[in-house]
Length: 522
Image (tube, rainbow, N blue to C red):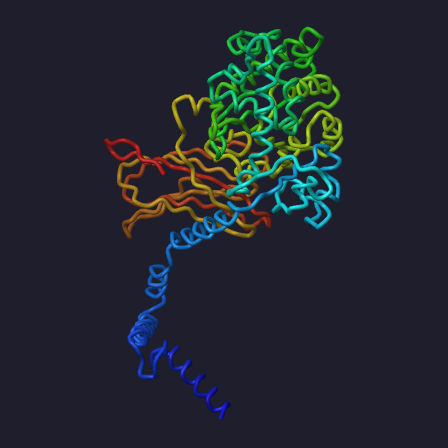
């Protein structure tokens, strides 16, 4: 009897899938109103399958649930959780200040009954409020809702309040990066600046206070506020050794450093030959940094840091050791937390030795921002953080010197070419008499490239605009070309990576100038 009922249920389910009957939802097999609707939906699905899969896919996309419902459900759960937390008391345990303790196994273990959770909060028990916590005195007791948000802000707010209190004892207001800092400065940028010094000292207010005071004294003695307008006589190094060019995907200015020119002994002697020349070079590096700081907003939620790209190609090791150490110490003491990400490109084999030499001068937070890219992987790494139209041409981008002086560049389209793959880029809709200009670049090249024009008319011939040729991996410049069509048709760019197993990133853009009209770009 039981087996027969199971067989009938399977048969009913099979027939429902095939659209023969409706799915029973409450009520008998004749079906309620919901059953009738299910039969209509099943028959509609059967008709859609007969008509073709494309129509079915469109219908499925239309019937996807809206994200707003899940978001509203999450919001309701959050509100319900916060209402429960309003009647609870939580104890916050700060993370350990010592770098060694932070790296220890204790900081990685989950919470237990005998160990507090570093950087987290737990619901307080009666004995904890009386004796001060699970084995360690708590630094903060939170009562009410929004516990996760308050826990994240607790060290910042406490450290900022204590730092302002210490600054209020100073005989005169202090100025850092052109912003007056202190409890009564009346400038929202002051808190942003102070928080950078606090983060550099793991929110230890007294250490951050000493750092702010020393930096303000150094700026007054060095004349840092006016160094950006000075003429230091390093025109040959501008745009080569240290310069700001474009923005990253987060809107941050990008500063490039390349010291390969000092491999030339004559250049090295002319710029860094003695102590006086080294001092003037350090002043010039501060000038470049000050110009980058002026591009920042230094406001809550704004662009408050830069992205730094350092090219290690042909960089001399011994000659720059003294200069590198002084630059690192100077920037870390007076420009803390101004670099959101530091990307090293064209990294040679000896970089590990150089990195171990610089490591004692770097904080743990600074080292966590490093990104390493070896030779042949530069464009792929930079494209993750910077759009191709802002990447300089020598690093596999489309930006040439002077391109940004006339306003924002034309956006580029990015694509990837797998190993053994051949890609055709077709630009349709070109009218007779129109001129098309294009740029295309492939990171690491080492493949074949060509371009041809295919007329729309059936009796016309295909024109070879650029005969297929192999571009070496050492090529840096992107391909730039233009073509005027005598008849309507399309331009086809061919990128052939069939001779390689390596995946490559690429970008292209084009401009079409129609006859007696303004250009259009894609």
